[in-house]
Length: 251
View 1 (tube, rainbow, N blue to C red):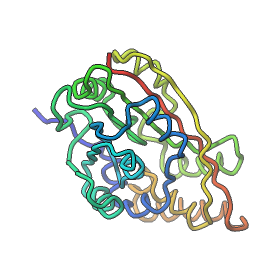
View 2: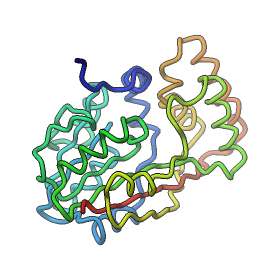
View 3: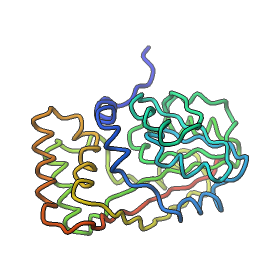
């Protein structure tokens, strides 16, 4: 029987545009890390695994706490960027549905910008398995603030040219996490404005999995439409984002 695999669109897109992902995707706000320290068990000596770590956007923010952080990333292109950006971090290949981690061995599992790609019930089960009782699960997303008209149009361009997202958007992660057997599930949001330029916005579009996975001709048309959208913007400018955190306890 075949085991779990990375979603085909995610694998193709993120392999092709790992460099754009590292260059153009936003980091995470200090306030988020502060919550993980105060409420999520992120502390010196804590055993932490960053699942689907990508290029290490979150991984690099966890290490200053003194926690023993291990990154898990299945795609070689993303992992290659991670080891450059976060030198010395222990790195393992693995999937959220089959974590290469001993049962009950972790204080904190983080998943930034990734859980929507997983087989949810299986991945939640694995997170429960590897966490000790009282350990924490943190699910994190940077979301574009689509209350801003040009940001909403950016998303419409990507979805129109890319054929739509290959995952379910805007899920109720608090409910799903609680239904998976976690306790004390909370949700917090943080402003995360990104100062960028026109090239950065185009690179952000290029880093989107379902755009990066397009045939070259369709991909070029999509990126040209994004370039047209911001062609008249004065640089630098703010690309508004909101960071969502769902934090829960392994009962």
